[in-house]
Every structure is written in C-alpha cells, then in structure tokens.
Image (cartoon, rainbow, N blue to C red):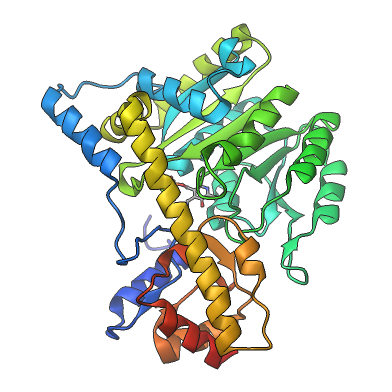
Length: 396
Ligand code: PMP
C-alpha cells in the first residue's frame, strides 16, 4: 500500500516559513506569512481575549460536547456580526450559521454541502486567489475554474474581464468572492463594482460564496461586512465563510463559521438539518474554547468595544506601514512608483516584485516573500522596515 505513494508537494507558503526558521541571520524578516504581527514583531494576544478567558476560567465549565452546529451563543453573535442584527435575513430567520474549524473549515463545509446538492455546478475563483481555494473545492469534488481578477498593468482589478466572465458562466455556477481585503493582491472592488457583480450574479442565477477572512482589516467592521449585507438584501442563495483567526488573533483556536442565507425560515431549517449531517460525518462537532471566547467578547458590551478598538489598532498599524513603505521607497528608489500599496486593503500587498527579485531578497538579505511578489504588510514594523526598504531598493 505505502510503497507506491509519492511525496506530495510542499505547501508553498508554509515552506517559506520553514526556510525562514532555518535561517541563522538575526536580521531575517518573514514577509511570506499570513499572520498579523504587532510593532514588536509578536503575534498579539488581544486584551479582549484575555478578559474573556478570565471570565471563562472563573466558571470552570465541564467539557461536554457542543451541539453539531456549535455553540448557540456563538452562532447567534456571528450571524448578527456577518449580516447585521437588524437585517431582514436575521429577523426573518432565513439565515443559518454553524461554527466551523476556522475559515478553512467553513469553506470546506460549504463545499461539501454544495457537492451534495449542486454536484454538477463548477466553481469559479479569482485569478489569483488564496492558494487553498482551488485545492479545497477540488477535494470536495468540484471542477475549479478561475475568472480574471488582478491586472498587473494597472495594479488593480481587471473589472471588465471579471464581469464578462461572470456573464458567461453557466447558470448555477458557484462563484467564490473575497468580501474584503483580497488575498493575495490587496485589490478590492469598489461599491459600484459590487453593484454590478450583485446584479449579474442574480441575473445569471449564480451561487455566490463570500469568503470573509479579514473583516475589520480593510476599512472597519461595518464597512468590510457591507458587501455581505448587500448580497443578502438582493435575495437568492448565499454562502458566507468567515474567520476570526486574524480579527481576534486566535489562529490556533480555529474559530470560523459558515452562514447560509435562504429564502424562507422553513428552507433555512432544512438547510441546517443537512449541514449538520455534513458536520457530523466530518468531525461531529466543533471545539469549545475559541467559540466561547469569541461569543463572550461579542456579547459583552465592554469587551466588544475593546475588541473594536484593538482591531482598529491593527488596521491602523497596517495602514501606517503601507504609507511608510511607499514614502521610504520614494526616497530610496526614486523612479519607482509604489503608490498603489496605499490603495490596497488588508494584510497583503501584491508588491510587483518579480520572482527573481524575491529570490535575491531571500538569498542576500534573508527577507522572505512569496514568489508571486505577495508581501504581508502586517509583518513590517518600525524596527525592520528600513532594512526591508534598503534591500528592496537594491534589487530594484
Ligand atoms: N480565506 C482566506 C482568503 C484566507 O486568507 C484564509 C487564511 N489566511 C482563510 C480563508 C482561512 O482562514 P483560517 O486560517 O481561519 O482557516
């Protein structure tokens, strides 16, 4: 059985971290990660999380199983965060939300559910997209295609190409869209562009699947979540995966959720009953701790306020790093225009650095980035940025 098994390719992003960890240079910088670091280069433990954990510790609850769909208080709080507590889908009980093992788990639940009920659909992801999207939907049994998205010439979105592709997809196609802070490019759609996308999705009867892994990292919790609400208001089937890995800095706790909006409460109940079967046959029910922390923060007004402030702090720090990156490069590498970096949203930037330049940065300066030129702006800080800028100026 085992003798014929070939070695699988290494995960490209995790491979960068392995190489980084093995590097002995004390000035090394890992811009290849998808993690937010604070200005001291540390993954923060948010104060709101610490306080929620202190509250939970005092209770010393027994570790029973959670329901298949997760902690009820968590599901409710997440649904209200994602769709808005006063939205019609929530008020009319047309939405269901199930706790999931991070954003990845939410995507996989949605993919497995769709494979059961729409097996002949094909999936469309942006070109490029988060590197796990394709593999994840393929492993659920779908053919995965891509629609045009990033335009290297303008460093923005090839919106005409994207819209044309949406218009020519067969009815019932599943379209994966990044709700905000597009990974890996940092290039998001404008409100007007979303209006067109929502209209085409409705006209062509496409199934929208919004992936929201960075709510609060773009322009704010409300602003980043707006597109989800707009899709929900437009009606029709809607899948939303969301993750608290970044927004709560709870990576290893694996906290995310899958929400599905339907056209009636009765339809929603049937959907939930089937989704529970998907969960039951995969991992039975989700873990407790992370969901309890997030539910406690979201449901306790002072903690929620604190979370919003801490999240804003992360967002502002990233923005400052974007501005510093552009300003310092103007100085060190005049003649190169990096202004687009301040237009991009979220943790990442498609920097425009070529694979060769990324290789030089790694080999000469121990600065690690993804071969595509994707850098994690959230890994820059006031201590490493000058070193990074000097090195980039040299390779340019
Ligand atoms: N979707 C996107 C676009 C992501 O960037 C990520 C992770 N960085 C995920 C989903 C998965 O989130 P999680 O780490 O919570 O599984």
